[in-house]
Length: 178
Length: 207
Image (cartoon, rainbow over all chains, first blue to last red; front, side):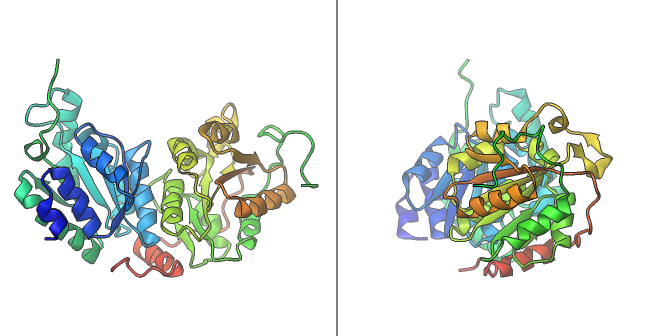
C-alpha cells in the first residue's frame, strides 16, 4: 500500500489513490449521487482525464478505445445504468478481452426506495456471472484498497474486465428523504 | 474551396454515391497511419474490402459504439488522427455520443457517416434519415460545427482533406446507394483487437 492510500480516510479517496497508483488516467461516468465525492475528487486532480457520457455503453466504448490506444480507463455508473450495458459487455468488452474497470454504485438493496433500482439490482450479478465477468462487492473500507488494487492488476494481466460493486455498507448509499 | 457548390448542400440534394468507392477515396487520404474504427455492418465490410490496414479496427457487435471507441483512441493517442465510420442506423442508435464528442472537442477525430436511409443488413427497413432526420443538422446542433454533407465525390475528397487538417472534430455525411458491401470481415474479435493494438504501437498496455 502506498503512503497516499495509507493516509486516505474516505472510501472515495482510497479509490482515487488506487486508480492513480495503477496508472488509470481516464475516468468516464454517468453521474451518481453516491459517487459524487469521487467524481469531484477525480475532476479536481489534473492527473485524470474525466468527463460524463450520455449513456453507460458509450462510456464502455470510450474506455475500450482508450485501452487499445494504450491508456487505462475506468467507468462509473449506478446500478440502474448497469441495466443498459449487457450488449456492450457481451459483444465488445468480453469477446475483445478489454480490461475495462467498471465501478457500480450499488442501489436496490439495504434501504432502496426505487423499485426500478431494486429490480435491476437483482439482474446485475446474474448477468455478470453468466458472462463470466469478474465482480467483487466491497462492503468494508479496510478491504477496499487491497481489493481494488489487486483486481485492477488481475484485469490487466488477464485482459478481462472487472466490476467493482461498492455496497451501501461502504459508501453509505442513498437514503429515502421523502 | 473552388469546388464547393454555391447552393447549400443538404441531404435532399447531395449526390447518391457508392459506399465502397467512397471508402477507397477515404483510405487514399490516410498518409500518417491514421486509425479507422469501422462500425458494425456494411461500413465495416467495405472498410475490410478496401484493404486491411493494421490501423483499422472492425467492430463486430456493440451497434452504435464506433464513435465512442474512436473518441477513446483519440484521447489515448492525441497525436494520431482517428476516423469513425458509421451507418445512419448505428448513429441514430447512439446520438448522444455526438454531444460528448462536441464537448470534448478532440482535434484529431473525424466522423464519417454513410447514409443510405435503410437498415441495410437487416432487410432494408427505412431509417428516420430516409425521410425526416438530417444527420448533419443533428450533428451541428449537438455542437460539432464542422459538419457537412458531401455534395459529390470531389466534395467528399475536399471535406476529408479539410477534416484531417482541422483542429476540431468534423463530421462528413454522404448519401450512399443500397449496393451490398464488397466483402465481409473476419469474425475473430481477439485477433482484430490484437492486430489493431500492434498497428497503433501498443502491446497490451502493460507498465
